[in-house]
Length: 494
Image (cartoon, rainbow, N blue to C red; front, side):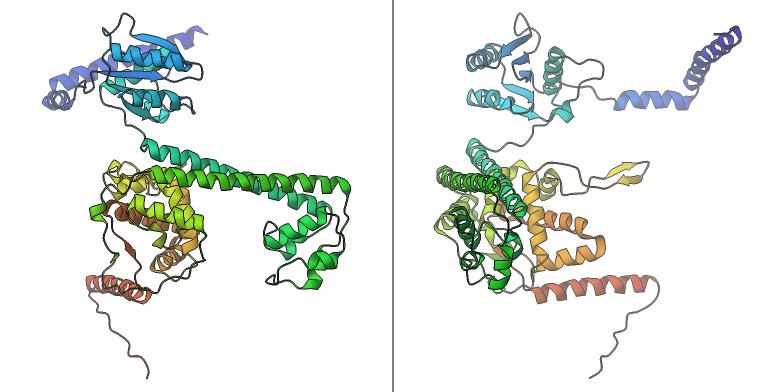
């Protein structure tokens, strides 16, 4: 570095402290500066310990680090293994230190066993999102992480993630496993379709579902050695819309032995997974039977209208349910206290997913707005300088919100008030925002129904449209009056 540049840098460096000291002296002499410092000292709040018996645990795959308040043990931070005996030792050490509440980060699935151990031992356990308990930059280690969690929890600065009661968690395990099985079944259907395409058999072009009754019958005949397109086409059900000649043309191809081998194994795997899904359904039914009834059965009443000036709508046509589906529907109504399948767009499996994800205790959220915010369906306003920078919804992975979004898409094809709301929002905002808005409306509706034990009764679509028309006319009259005009109704021609 040259001498001139060093002198220039020295001047810049020496000017900064001098100017800062001058500003400090000037502020201290002015009465406004003294008042500002006095107000800042008065409004400054000091952190108080709200949880003196708090501990923090940094969860790992092989080792857990636990921190307790200083003075509770000879060493305030200890490490424990992840084996069951070592987890029992950790629980005993926390009891010896007179700990009553514990905070831990949600690290993968490694926290589940420790969480259940602590909950069974009577501790108040806070499962904290890692984004809310970020460590101070530049100080990252397992020991410092558990100390940081313990300190934040002792000051009451951590917020627990939602986790329902143990019976709902058991149901959630069954339901998520069933979803994985359905995805595996869909994967094997893709393998079947790929093998058929390579043999130039366009079965999926003439059948809407190759895993249906007609599709499986044709596949079994092909694997049994049948190659005559006419005989294969005759196995299709009479309700298939394609003609016999079209099905025969689609089943004329090159039956290669190696592709038939792949087709055979893919079909076997698909049927095995279908059997596992049936077994999982029975496990779900048994778990539902063990869940207690609605906590407030006295609140359960007859269905009442949710909107004013409503009349009873015509019952929707539904497909006949099998015995298992009827049993699941009965258990869901008993547990929730209301029949959520009466809401358009929600079937038994959708309600079962909602129950396994949100539980039955709506008191976990202070109101319906907090509930839909947890679902990630409400606007996330970012305001700076009195200006809204963004109002997009938060990016969250919530299976209950996914179900509500799918239900909103189904509502778009229904002649219901909720369907009319979706179509109106789609015309104004576009399909993605309309799906989110309708899903939010469904979330608020479900929250009120479960919390109040109020049955759902659909509003008449004509009355709903008239009510919306009156709201639009009242708004237009107010805007016209603000500009000094009046709305005049144009007489219609006879």
